[in-house]
Length: 299
Image (cartoon, rainbow, N blue to C red):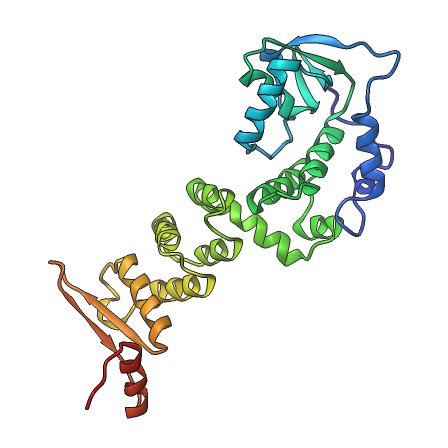
């Protein structure tokens, strides 16, 4: 069984500087992930016994790049051994998860590895540092990295913010994304929803509507301001329909029409596909402006 403590000298506090990850942390991970020493042996491990870093919050990898690496491994083999630690009868990855995944795609049964002794705290630090240093890290993965560190070391949001050089509000907003349904988190990771849009969705009073509204936001390409207005309307409702379930589609349509005409627009949808649209205007000049937008000329 892997040890739980030790091996970090000054402890986790030395891992982070005022700006993201400290030089000390980077140097420490370089020591752990350094190339093979003369006294170390490269061993062959069954791929079925190799497991991801248990503290690694990243679960999404570029499929195309993995396929390219798998093709290279099929032709040339794994040129650089992965680095692992032993945990009972299994081995946990310290460095080389892409090589492991690609080797499985290439239908290999074994992989070359160097086995090192690394404690849990270092494994957690490696996972966090690797994630925070990635240019393509999405908001959900960053939130998962912070959440994992908070749980691992029992740290508060303020302490995390201080350690990684971010505003506390930024950390708090990222962590709030983990309260979204998994399907909505997937939309963020796929690039279909921005962090701003997702944060607006969290403002919905009826949390059961989040997934439905997220679909509308994506399908109608609503911007952040439109999403915020939509959420506000859904939360407030209108006096006439306060006790009636309002279609998210109708609310989204009203919001888009208001954006187009620059005035209050009310959409009343009937039960048989009929309905009416009311467009408010405050003066004759305002009416003329709206008619011009509709390309209507009145003699």
